[in-house]
Image (cartoon, rainbow, N blue to C red; front, side, top):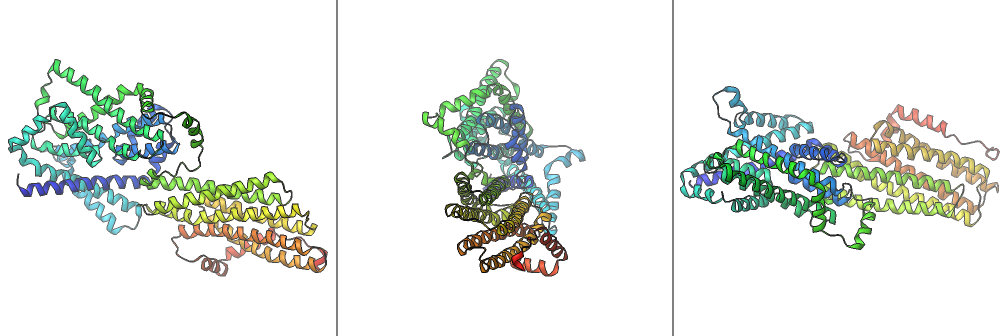
Length: 597
């Protein structure tokens, strides 16, 4: 083996690892966080958890990614440790899918159809289709599909390059003797564990072993302990992700470690006892890619079958390793109730899922802001201390939501998001500030109600009736904008601006009427200040509702216009807008009073 073979080997390894990374990222983007959401929600039954763990891992081509997600779920309190145990078992089975795909590279036959099944035959075609999608399509899903196809082609090209580069090693006696040494179970396990820990992917390290089969020096006797070690080495990623996490998350990482260590020990003890008695003839035969895939799958399926009934014992073992302090046992129940458990930084590595979590929390934030407005408005007709405390508590929670979500979404925005997630994140980033300001204005309304109560001030009957109309318009715009946000509904969003325009009209009209009452001595100046304060806050709330609706329209239409330009154009050009405005103006018509004559 000369320097050029070594360079080819390095290049092949680089292509192989990059292809695997590109393939996994593309599959993850294509799922758009849906697979991860399913994994998060449908894991109550152990058998279902194993199947989901296997399915998600096979789809995203990474047991490490699945396990890190599980650690994040447990850390955030949205998944119990018991559920995590079985998902981790399934993830170990799912990761074997890669070795079966790579085993196709070893197909040998003169039959056309069998030859075409060999990846080196069809991967150039996939690469061509992929590059056509990337260069000639504007649709994002086709771009992602193109990246996926190119990733697979690069992966298989790297695999072939490695196999060709290492094939001269079969003529070097020292290389053959090296693998004789690794047939020692302990040394073989150490090699497999160290290699996998370095590249943090058991699928990749198994692929490298499959490529080395081209030398003919890798016997089944040396391959088996290396594969066992690879399963232990893959635990490093989960252990690293658990650093600084809560105790249950660290326990989930240790469950992964214990499952692989115990499974490896049991498998090897049983296997080598049987080998001592039966003397398996294949142990000294040269391994091939299919054989490696069979061993990899056999181990993980056997380990899962053996340890599945003892899932609760694995959980207890992890709890014994990471013990609870007495005080922490009481604290843990409170931690599960925390509202921001979904904003775990581990989920940033799965942008689709992280975006979905941000959306879920912003929907809750919108509901809290809406509640604060409705409770504050109710205080105008009957102030009470408990109601005031509720409004202030809601406003404090909304403030916290804005702080947590804004900081998290800024980090998320720097990740590789697909088009749909990018649009959703844009709407969320625009909206959290508006929801926070809505709750601030609710507190202002609450303060006005408190001032009226403390100074024993009352609205005139005319002001009460006018304000009732205004309150109904305010509640409607808050309800419609919140629903439009939750559903990202363009139709509902289009209803918001006409109501906002009517509210602007009401605000001006109510101030004119108030001035008339002042002139006639029906209302006091002090009451007038409070009345003006309330109507101004109503109008500001409607402005923020308008901002939320416009952000949905802008994002959905891929528009870069300024909000005021959009509104001006809508008023000037849109007949439907004018029709809706007149309709809402009639609906929120103010009553007529004699002093207006």
